[in-house]
Image (cartoon, rainbow, N blue to C red; front, side, top):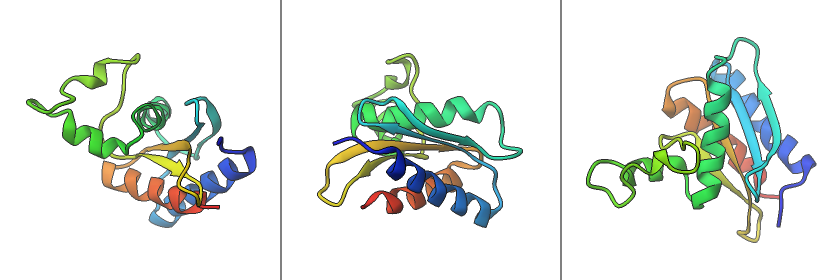
Length: 134
């Protein structure tokens, strides 16, 4: 299964609406099952440096089939994934990257969000995840 452009736009719009609601301009990236960019938006006044972070969060979630906050917990010193962020051309291991699944539970892609504190990034990503269940 792979996310369609229509699904990706639905996820992107839901995440963008949440970012607008909380008043934080975000960079939002949607990747497909193969971790290729399917959709991206840099909201007005979102940090330039966060564009790459949003992509890396989405890729990280998809590469390892888990939300980036979980990977962050596992990658702390002494953790089973310690220093994993140095692999795959650089990963992001803090919250804001989440898997996207269809109603049958199949992974269809991932979303990565960056532009605010990680708690807000995760909140916006979660709003996108909710829109993915089609």
